[in-house]
Length: 224
Image 1 (tube, rainbow, N blue to C red):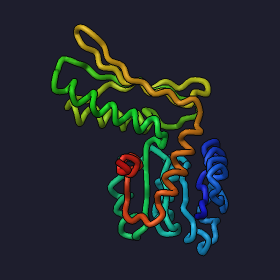
Image 2 (image 1 turned 180 degrees about the vertical axis):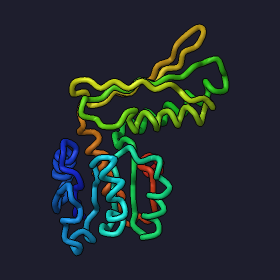
Image 3 (image 1 turned 180 degrees about the horizontal axis):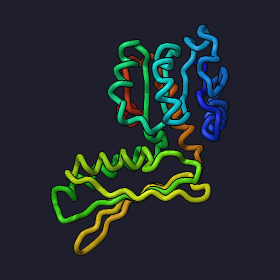
Image 4 (image 1 turned 90 degrees about the vertical axis):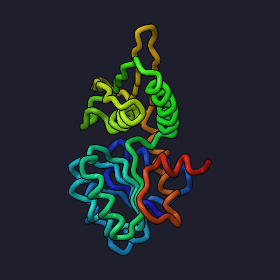
């Protein structure tokens, strides 16, 4: 397998290192996907960690040019159906996620169970606090929105989300449930961006023989 990295910022460097650890060839990187040789691109999986604006401008070209695409960029959920349709029409496999950390995906699975039972019990008010580094462009984070969607589906209530941007925090997500007599809190804290990069490389390896568009968590838990 060969991988091209779209977006060579902090996450792009992390992805490159994760590819090397797995013995996967990195065939190139650039902020401009049009700069890649078309014949090379068709042999490669593209891992995209750019910006919401860049992904919105590039997703059609990504679907047309590459063998498969792993999307780590967030901030485009409002056009999700349009993006999925584009990849499906072109027959290009795509895996996307608001967060590729294995720990976060397990965290979300645990949240589904907690929210389900608290929703049945009633009497609990959910809330989310997410903290990230000052360079993060979107707020709330894509992960926070995914967590909120889980809570809303299981409890039929939209949780308040508070976003904090400070220092160089890799990312902390807290989901709380406030009751009259007690409080339940679930939290995931990332120590670095390495876990996100490792999960994205795991997703790239999953594209071998894959058809269609999937959210990373669906493939991850499909192993069971």
